[in-house]
Length: 309
Image (cartoon, rainbow, N blue to C red; front, side, top):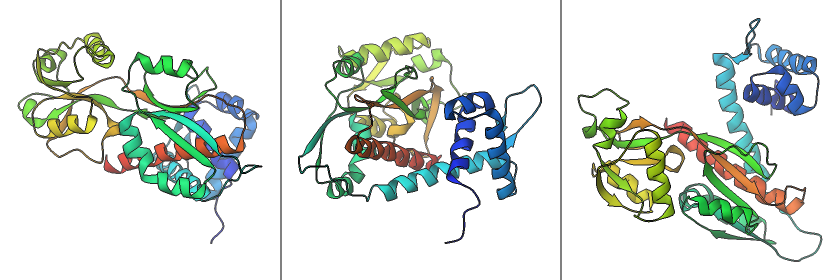
């Protein structure tokens, strides 16, 4: 294998700088000096022979087109490294079984975790994972705060940056999607008034998640007037949308591959975040294995979405 034209440390610095868009914040994040950050980036650019970061007096640093492409490939590189690490067999100091309780929405579990679960369990026979699934609602926050779960993957608008138990994994585009028949002759995105006139596929009436979804629509000025169906199952919603039965609010990261070519984002809602909750943030070899497995599952899922965009 040929020598790589970068060091892992340089990749860490570049990734942090791309996230913070600030040499100062990047330095604080990594616990090094701003000069060290600058030197690491310059060395990386020299070794690659391309400019990754644009530097302009009085403006925040920004990624060049080459830098953006490098960041995409870097994320794929991280996923590959984590996948190779998953083959490591972890054995506790004793032969005692370690059990963990996890809260993950059904779409996340089916599309992100289940495809890789057999390999993980076979490689880690001393780890038992028990999964629960709850539809997104305020109940989830209560379940988390009650310390019932060791880990949880959540889809949320809230910022957990100040809480060390939460790790942000991805930013998720969310919007109201529908068949192109609903936007013929109209300019996208549709107005809130136009969207309100369309038939909606909603969550079951009277549930927490239904009330919260309607409250969220109201903040955008959307008030659905026609209901064409109700279901908790995202895959059913997607099928109904593709058949032109109605429109629905669906986060991009639960799509199982690309939508049909006739489906469009009719109205863009605020981005949400995928976060990983970990009840005990303290270092523990076995917990680290579970944590890394979940992070890798989400990264793989996000890469699939990126490949289809």
